[in-house]
Image 1 (cartoon, rainbow, N blue to C red):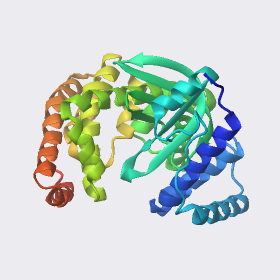
Image 2: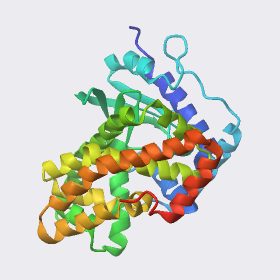
Image 3: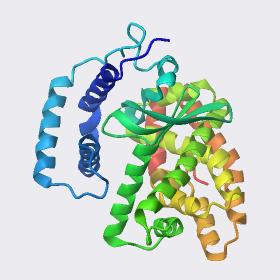
Length: 350
């Protein structure tokens, strides 16, 4: 297979990243937007995670980036320079062409239909539950929001560089108030108090495994829900409706894979970190799980946690199928119903 020119490929992938950002970046809340822009600037400039940013330079960079986005809003995504031109969403073909060069690529749609692209160095590949897991380190191209993990057509992508950045941001935010709770327990478990740099590496390894487990759970959920679930998710136009559907599926995936594995392994720091990030609808829909975690912290007995995820396997499948049946009956009415269920919470809660 012909060698792909890395520089040309980087330019093409980054161009598509910039187009995706031009279309969607400013849909974020202002707080999330500014945090994401800080991180993208740090990545693009190659700055260490711990290095303070110079506000004037960051502001000037943001202004230049927003000017670029204004020029790209109506641009079309570019084919990648592989085999005479390759669809940027054809992950299988692209990764087959890049494997011999130690590179990994992903292109796909995320929350709210926003496209995400990245190109990185492949550090290892493994098989999990019939899935190919591609793990990357240094990234050569990326967009504003860098999901640390994703499932795309039977491929799981774990982005260690993006994961470390996300974890570091979590520790920075926690460091402002240093509140007690699940995140502090996770940080203590990883040893952040004694050596933050080494602890970050340990945490990236541990939480990378948690992310893989979640993507495996999503793949396990797919045959339970059928192909119509993906059609529904792609067809939802109201954000609250999509939030509900994703929260239900995430809870199902975690009951099928993530929680059973973490609890079986007695992975204390990862269990704490899981609950530190169990928020929003996922948490309010699953109060039983939060209560089981509180009991585990008090007593060290994981029996309630095990019962919660076992019952959740049935409950969240039935809840997802209820959503799907409602949508199949009347897609337009379903969106309003889903939004109403978000307000009620108890309509689907366990």
